[in-house]
Amino acid sequence: MEPMASVDDLLSDALRLTPEERARLAHELLLSLEPEGEAPAAETEWARELERRAQEVINGTVELVSPEEARRQIAERLERLRRER
Image: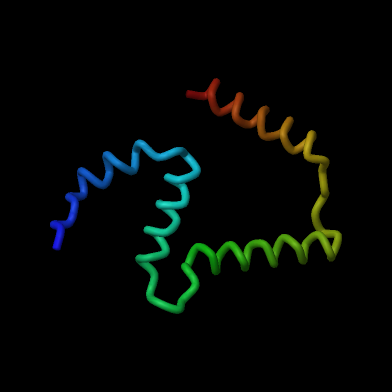
């Protein structure tokens, strides 16, 4: 039986993966920390948040903006935060 690689060796190998492969590895490692058969807490919370937002759209209680407008607003906020630093 081959000895298990050290955490440092695994990390070194993982850092040589592509960003997509690292994201998949990180995702799988995080999932492995959750009790078997249970949805990860973050996944459950995101599902609730998506349901809440969808209901706001259905009810007409939020103002919808185009993707271009959303990008513009985000860019403005980021620029303001950078200037405040």
